[in-house]
Image 1 (cartoon, rainbow, N blue to C red):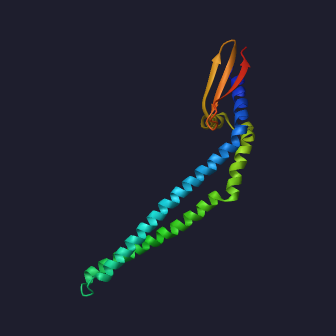
Image 2: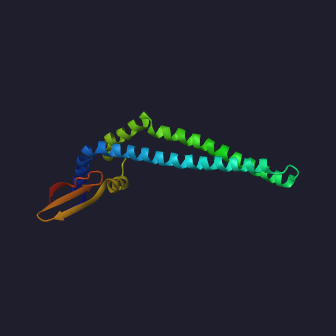
Image 3: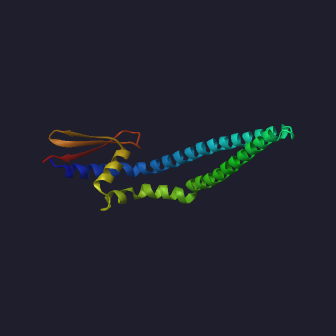
Length: 174
């Protein structure tokens, strides 16, 4: 039996399996994005708190130095200024990243995720989608594909986003 009928049957089964799982996949992607954005924001917030603490510590050291000891005062002032520059750069990066994160969670981004799940059959069947890209998509979307050959060929596909197991298809061998 040639590979073309098997490829066609696998494509059909994958598209059938993805239809009910598409919404679940879109929701899972949105939840993952939300979770990762939250984790990144918490990490950035911790870094910002640490930078504020270090800048405040450098300020207190500078204020405690004896003004007659100019070399020490100059070094402590330089350290304080460096900490303030680091804090300012970190705050700007934190604000920029928060803005970028908000764009990941806004309604247009969520619509694009939903649209991708709805467009999957169109993308899969597009003549510009090559065999390599289809294989990559198949690899990402399936746990495994099994072919059992007797009088007919049984194809079993376990879709990764569907927790309930196998989708089956039969094609006749020739």
